[in-house]
Length: 267
Image (cartoon, rainbow, N blue to C red; front, side, top):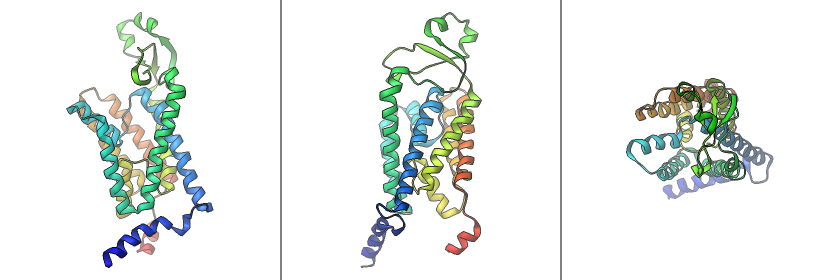
């Protein structure tokens, strides 16, 4: 009987009176999730992907596993599902539903943007220095100048690279970190996460009192650093960690850490 009552109490969290379907609180919470997911997905497509950054998360970790041992990227779904189950146990089923919605929305916004825009233009950066040059102009550059340019990746790599851009790494990283932080913080403030390593941050936050921003910095920076094992240089991991640091600080501004007094009252 006691076990049944625990299960019943767990499912009862789905009917949180503060966020009943159609209430003002419900619209605010799910509106935040929609806005946060749009910002996060677009930040990833226009500031992270064009520069090849790897700012943590389960996709960043699986990318390292893939390059080291050939692990299929599709295995990331098992990591996401496992973390969702763990998060729902520790944070309640309502958290799980919101996070599933976040994961779906981020995927949907990414798909829409890629299919209707990026597949025609490639993953063009919003921030760069100088002009975007054609592949023929790039081929005529001296070798030392070629090292200053990055290719504009094509959608699904179905076509050869046709253009190159000269990256403005630090400004792109600053703006990307700001956009990432705003998107994730809005999602966090609605009681959800973008999935993956953010779930770990929210669980630890609940039981330790450490700020969400600090936890995101620790977890995602560790994952970004793991990419050093690929032997491709230190530039991308360093810029990725800077992005993660800015993201974490923005999260703490928008979702401030709980004050000790508030935690004592809850206890």
